[in-house]
Length: 111
Length: 112
Image 1 (cartoon, helix red, strand yellow):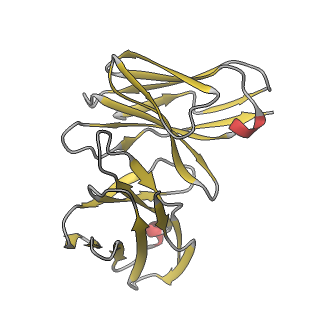
Image 2 (cartoon, chains in turn orange, cyan):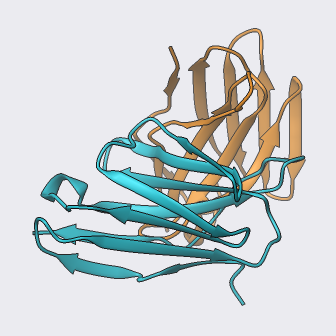
């Protein structure tokens, strides 16, 4: 089976740092994606990790530990526009490396 | 210009009606996908296609059908719409090598 867990909701203050965790149990693993989705809009690609470690991209960083089935997305210098849902998605193994999405973490950034 | 477009963006229909949602892309990607999104359930895969001659069912294909008319076009049909098909529908595309999926703007479908 496949299971991806993320917190349902988080709150943070403008200018702060927030870490959104994702744990997964999947049959096979070929990488983990993070997407940002504003309410009613399309998910947009943020990051992709396939090897252990930290990937930094501007204010956003993503970390992966394959042995622990764990990833996090780190958002620094939070801005109001970062209020959105953040989706963790795992790419499985096999002929079709299906992307399995978590239910998302809704982040609310307050002034 | 948007790389992945969907039409219509919003649709309200009645139970039993046939509905077609269309997706077009200019990214030159071979792979195309249809997802639905429901509150609290995340994105779930309905159908996917790796090329024009390759169509596959996803995890929730019952009640849906698809057509890949060309590399750039992938349509989703609801043969006889029912209220529990009310959802936000997304089309996505990916290149074979990277497989990062890029999503269209979505179609909000309401079945009364």
